[in-house]
Image (tube, rainbow over all chains, first blue to last red; front, side, top):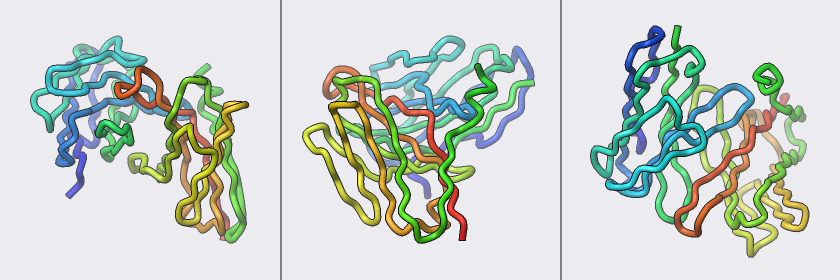
Length: 111
Length: 114
């Protein structure tokens, strides 16, 4: 089983719909992250959490929100999806040293 | 614009050649760097890391070189194989020590021909 699991792996939705991407991990790490990947733009940080009571905005947090339900769970929400949020989304975890361990990604298409 | 960003730098090599992928980083205060490999349809995977108190680190078939003077990082892959074909990202940590996050470069595509 994967150490970092994302659901759903693929989702097609319409403009204005609320979407939640979920992430769970079995690595026992305190730190969790959500990144967005667009072709040719690399990975950009949306939100991160260093422990259950900690939430921080990343580089591109507008239009997104997160919830850290437990040490092992970190979900990303799009309250009202728009087409330019079409992208590949990655959840990641790390310990204090900083190496990131990524999930397999969730491909979101907003029509 | 978005259309320019779609075109990743690409390095094409023959199987068995050595490959060198370069990365310029921006923050002179960054003290930890990582190279990741991303195969099609998968999440990025750790290859090798280096701290700023070193200028070279070797792994299995890979070497990372760090030049802090010009803020340059390189990944050398020896005897490149078709399975090395992927997009490679460098990442640097930024922020307060112990509470930093990784910032990624835009990536380089490596294509290995048999």
